[in-house]
Image (cartoon, rainbow, N blue to C red):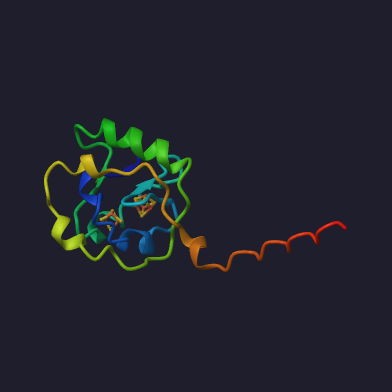
Length: 128
Ligand code: SF4
Ligand code: F3S
């Protein structure tokens, strides 16, 4: 068993969930998060934290599609354990039906995004 992030996270991405997870098993896409099913310890503390009520135990019926999506994207998206600001239009999308049309497979920035990027090496001097 694991917990899964479902449709209403799309374009809401409040990220309250990442702050409470004891094993940091959330991964960030461009406009939603997923839970790594093999890392989740089923503690359940994230579920009531989500303002969009997008997190469910996978024992709920009808979540097969979302379990598959969580498992797939948790392998490639970056880890996130530190909450950032939600999208400015998050509240407008909270509860909107049929949000899967907005799903983006692109990765999010993850926790590493705030770190400074290494300076690229200088251009080699032109050869005479
Ligand atoms: Fe993390 Fe617990 Fe939520 Fe699983 S149920 S994602 S371990 S907070
Ligand atoms: Fe998504 Fe809810 Fe977390 S909207 S980012 S699952 S707090």
